[in-house]
Length: 318
Image (cartoon, rainbow, N blue to C red; front, top):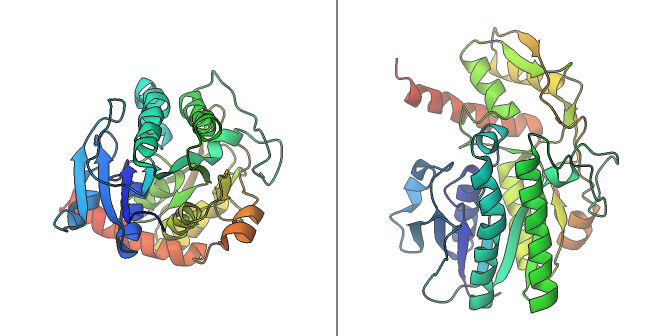
């Protein structure tokens, strides 16, 4: 165990806020850095009164200094949903490049273990299924999703360069589709979109013919995998995601069933470069980290539905 203090970039986002909670639960104090471009202070409002938690509003593309000792640097800062990174393409590339470098240099300065939150998007529209960490991917470098895909691919390359050329203790985690409380209803990704539509009685809009697949993992399981990698000595990359795969049409039908919604399913045009399949090979995570998902899709969705019901009431009291 290194010094029991961590820096979490992007800590006020959906995934980052859950990671902050998990670290605090392990007795690790947290410095949360976020410019609130896509995150929100609401996600960490319940933590701000704690002595072991500190929020600093900071743009990570600027030089970063954190006083005191730091044992871990978790770099999660980035737009993550297509709606956000298509709206913020330059910022997404900047935080994936200069932001990653600044986070790496902070870890180097502190002698901390660095964990890069990468993504299954580095595999693009995969030609290998399921996707092992050894697969190099099939990414369109000039397509509409490229700002996110290439930002993360560059971040992986830069992290590897710091590890090999400077001896930094650095690791890469490739995160697959994650869902749970604190996703924004207007996030644009499938689950928050389906839940918002079902709970407000709108048609559920499934892109294409709905046969494209994803493997969805509850945020608590994802965070447990990130922490397990951080506490190990493995450099990664390591896939963290659910090996349970389902089609978008089946997911929409499940959401309608679990919410008891009268909504119908409507098919709309499929976005350009939308991957046809996505499922991680989690052998490495299971064998090296002892990690596998514990929360079933139905259990996780029920808890997420409960949160969304409250969120939608807050957003629209009428």
